[in-house]
Amino acid sequence: MRFVFLLAFMAFIELYAFQALRTLMADWSQWARTLATAIYWSFPALAVGLYFWAQVGPMQQPWKGMFTVLRALVVIACLSKFLVVLFVLIDDIRRLLWKGAHWAGLVPEFDPGRSRFLSQMAVLVGMAPLATLTYGISRRHAYQLRRVRIPINNLPAGLEGLRIVHISDIHSGSFTDNHSVAEAVRLINEQEPDLVFFTGDLVNAVADEALPFVPVFQKICARYGVYSIFGNHDYGDYHHWPSAEAKAANLRLLEDIHRNRLGWDLLRNEHRTLDINGTTLDIIGVDNYSALKRFQKYGDLARAWQGTRGDLKVLLSHDPTHWELQVVPDFPDIAITFSGHTHGMQFGIDIPGWIKWSPAQYVYKQWAGLYRKGEQYLYVNRGLGYLAYPGRVGILPEITVVELTGDPDALPTEEIV
Figure: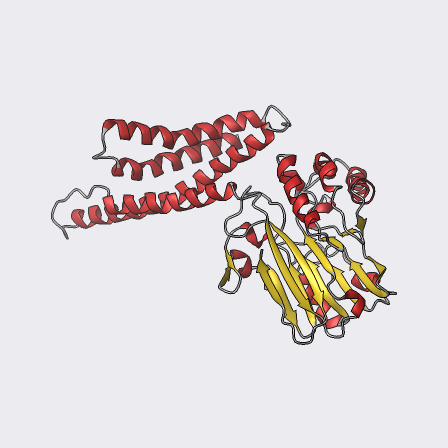
């Protein structure tokens, strides 16, 4: 029954939005009208076809990739038509007011047809997200390499020039092929990192999503190891489980994937102390901890920090809101916090030194890039993968190379390579 109501509602939207196109096509040739009409109605036809395709069951690659892209195109088309409907509605209100004024004798008899100007505006406004978001689908694997230089006061000589590759938010359940993922791994290893940090969200909802990509991600290597944490999507909280035991088993599988199959050192409210060139480095990792009520507070930084003794302390914490909530006021000896989570909303304008904007900034104070308070830094990675919308517009998938320096005259820098 819900599907019937949804189908009726969507049919109404399609028919209503079509009025703008029909007005615009009034003086077109028959051939042009036929072509435009066919293209317009192909999207709702595709939507119905995809619905029945989804009922068949789980899909394998490459069918999953095709389905994902087609589904995204349908959603984008629907969004565009909603915008068109707004202009058509404005036009109908205008016509209704004119008719009311005529009935009241305030204006002479006149038949206000649909406004060609408003129809043109409707189609133009509707085309903007259609073109932009469709283009963004082609950019979902356009990995962007960023180099960040962070000056640390009194940095031990043994850590001078230490290279850390930071990645986050893989969301393997959204990936549709191994080839694109392999390109990301190639870029990571090409940097010859001393350390690799992964700051959470390996999957969208269930651990099984990561299994097809284990052979690719296990090739990530670093001189002193790969360290990882969980993000809010990794706990299985966004999936309906038949029992608490099934959910617990899913988390155990994901732990096994990190530690044994990928060979990553998963940190769950704990730390590791490394000896690097005669200098000690503490890598602290916590479970998800957010200042926002809708996200979990599983992390225990006090527990993870207890017993640290390094000359330099860094923290892996998935949600950047954790930094101002707890790290800055309570743990001043943590020099750098590495986070992810926001994806930069996968939409915005981001040109270092010129402009940095995304809808993410209205939700997160620190949403992408490097931030500083006193002698403490936060780096928010824009994410390697994608979620929901299989694309990136302006905010591209990111691989970050962080280099530490003790140069007292150096300034923090961030650049696109």
